[in-house]
Amino acid sequence: MSHPTATQLIEAVQLFLKEAEGELKGRLAFHAKVAGNALAIVTRELAQQPDAAEQQALAPFGGADNLCEALRAGAIDPEDKALLKAVRQGVLARLAVDNPRYATFARLKERDIA
Image (cartoon, rainbow, N blue to C red; front, side):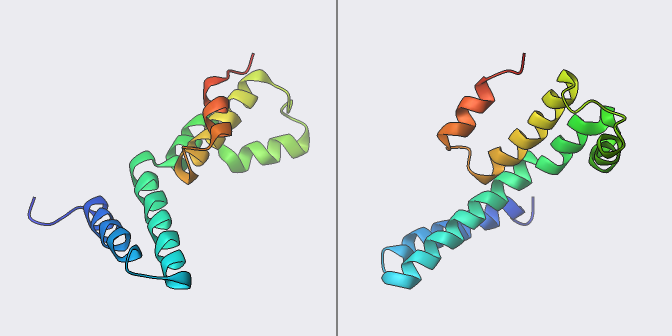
């Protein structure tokens, strides 16, 4: 490859911010940490593509927009086990991008809907 990937570029900026954090104080150090965390989220989003995961999970129900309409119209039971499992998959895909180290996320990921 003749040029770095988006992920490689993000990782280079993350490394710079981590190094700079040690030299910064107060508000600037805090903002450097926030920027590094934001870049980590972007990296996970590029790798995991939660929008696509959610679309795939909700496809059997016509996608998110159609699902909302069907629920409003009473055409789909909101307690349907397959629906709950699909919604859960979409939510977990999004949470995995936000912060996969959340203890609650880990527990939810392991738990299955009966």
